[in-house]
Image 1 (cartoon, helix red, strand yellow):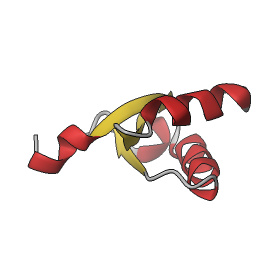
Image 2 (image 1 turned 120 degrees about the vertical axis):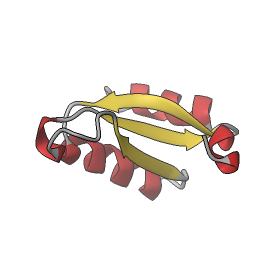
Image 3 (image 1 turned 90 degrees about the horizontal axis):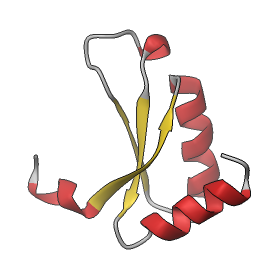
Image 4 (image 1 turned 60 degrees about the horizontal axis):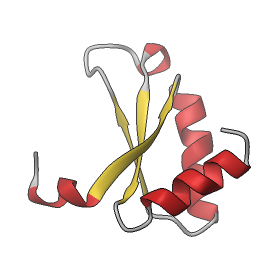
Length: 71
């Protein structure tokens, strides 16, 4: 784990790259800092789950936002 990775927390799992990008866009437009990371590096992006990550200081608020939006 890199030194700055401890600042990031997984807040949601996405079933595809498309869904991950949709969630990232929604969160970013709302002002959250977001990263997306594939779970398994050996799988094609479309067949892979993705972690949606937010800064630890914003994680709960970002989760609440996604819940309000139905995710």
